[in-house]
Length: 98
Image (cartoon, rainbow, N blue to C red; front, side, top):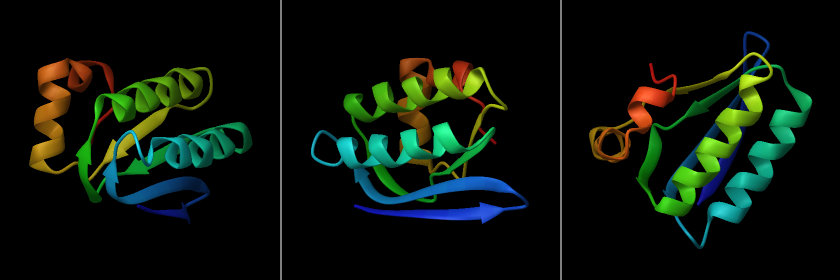
């Protein structure tokens, strides 16, 4: 998995590529936690994410909870396969997905 960090109009953008699973979730969560501590809002650009495991769902939920106290977490460019996982688990009702 590749993890890119960008900035868009003063907002941090975390853009992972590949699968977020039990093998890669620690690196994903570590980078996300860095951005959470340094920023008031965060965009998670899911364009390059092809799969999320239950470990990834837990990590995204934790990041969302931390960002709720700040400016919030926005997920964007979620592909159909990952969106279906969010729908089945109920995450699509809880997360800010655009």
